Image 1 (spheres, each protein chain N blue to C red):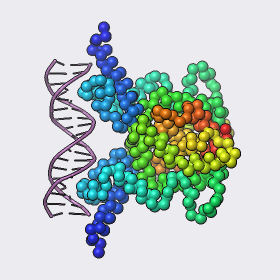
Image 2 (image 1 turned 90 degrees about the vertical axis):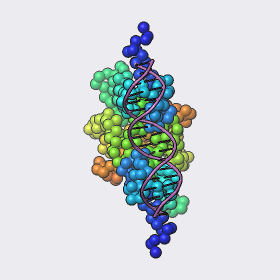
Image 3 (image 1 turned 180 degrees about the vertical axis):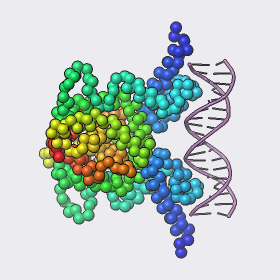
Length: 208
Length: 208
DNA sequence: GTCTATAGTAAGATAGAC
DNA sequence: GTCTATCTTACTATAGAC
């Protein structure tokens, strides 16, 4: 019974999504046309609109899939398996900071087509739109909260938590967009994460 | 004698460029159509092609203007007025680092329409193109050189100079694109620069 | 040099057959 | 549900008058 209408539809839906992910990564989200997706999925052009209202709607669906998949927040590994409930997250602790950065990096790495597409979308909205700043503050909320705790615990910070968090996020996402898609990557994930951790923890002056 | 053909042409050229800058900032480079530019300049559509072959060519012209204007390198204030020739640039010194960041920030601020447009262009090229990484390494060459010197002088760094430089550049440019165009800016330039300086110098742990 | 008018192109979106 | 064929729109780019 692989031939019911329902099943065929789901197969097509999945094929479209998978094709879109591939195209978004290869051509970029902005450059990908509806026909690129249907062709890559081996379907006719018209089929697209039986499943999605637009390319933007498709991206939102992919985003929902990503969230449903559990890799919830871009910088919030708080729900990691085995983590004790009330455990303190001290960002000033090297292990914790490294874990946070690694988690964010892993999420972006695993969902690169979607993450990169969202990034392109927010940039394409134009400077005046304010979407870049909006997305930055939204996606770094977990960072900001941890930094606020840190400050309230008496730890001095280089600036207001929201600004520091946004700065860290700008660094992470921008670097991920530049480095992760490369076929010949000049640095390993481990080296990047170590460098980011040390830079954020002790700065240039602090050394490794 | 304000009516020679030559003069009229130059006026139109200038009007087109100025209109383009305004439109790039308001609508974003990618969203700006040729007709948006000519309309904003108060000229007919066809005129555009008498001066530029395409929107990309126009952007290159604006970039050339920016360079010609003297604000040469995005992070190289080495040619600052009054600077002694052989003066050492120690990035690990707070004043020097702050000056470098401030110079880069000022260039971006003064040429925001062009800088933002180039940023949009490199992102729109798509992840697979590698243009994002290319632009990042290119624009942070001065940073990299200074960091290399620092390392050779025995100063420990959080990672390889090129990677650290690219990371700093990613932070700067991404933050500038998000914050500078906002009509109601949540942070002053001074606060941003102080925060960036302290973060890069001593990290989260170091405090201000 | 600049204008108006229009040709050309590419992509989004839909209608109706199967 | 999916296909082919087509309509529509928006923009780029050019031609020719002034």
